[in-house]
Image (cartoon, rainbow, N blue to C red; front, side, top):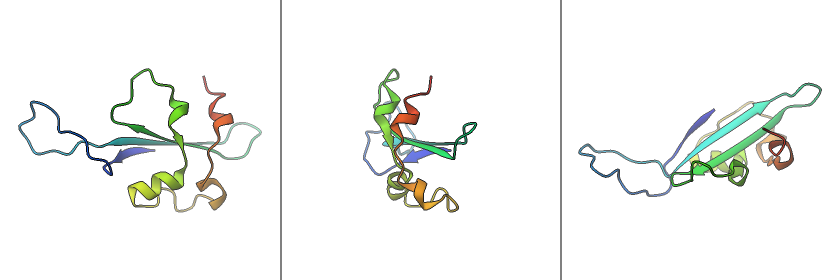
Length: 95
C-alpha cells in the first residue's frame, strides 16, 4: 500500500498554471509472510526531494508514524505488535 503526505510545505511546480498541492513525502508499507516465518512488515517514508538512487533502508519508519502523519488508520486489523515494528534486519535482506 502506498500514499502521499501533505504535512510539510513544498514549493509549487514551476510553470504550472493550475491550482495544485505537491505532497511533501510519499509512504509505502510492505506486508509479507515469508515461507516458514511469521508476518513481516516494513514501512517507509520518502521525502519529495529524495534522490532516485537513494538507499531506501534510510527511509525505514513504522506504520504508527505513517498513521500519525496521515491522520488515519491504515490497517485496522493489523496486530498492535506490528504497528511499531521497524525491522531493518529483514529489510536489509532484500535484493
